[in-house]
Image: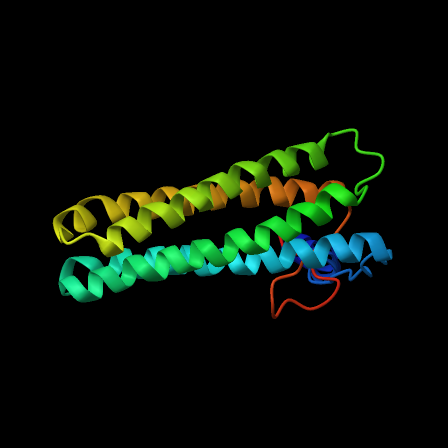
Length: 187
């Protein structure tokens, strides 16, 4: 039994040390067209984060806030949707103009363009709804309907981001979250 234990240790120790090694591969170099597409889409993604954050803050604070503060939260959500809607218009123009990815056998560019169109309509609807909530003298409506509407907007943004992830994969554009070193796989 002692020989078997020693033999087993001699076989398993080198294998365990190999498992701890990480292979870091360089990211592919992007051409100017892919860089332009990536940058425009990341600016929009960052802009949409402010909408999601405003809706989450409103959800957290709405029940315990005063009527004036509740109207302020609705105004913040409306303003964030308006900013993202303006950003989206320029981003959609860039995506339509550029031919990335090429070829596109998975039809990710048309899917992204359709998702951007849908998202633009949803953001415009968000602006109108939350402006109405912030101007309404009846805060009961604001407290009853604003949080579910904010959650719907956040869900629609999340759905768009899934389409964006598939587009980035098809275009071979690697996007790393802040703090993740180059070469590390982010998902």
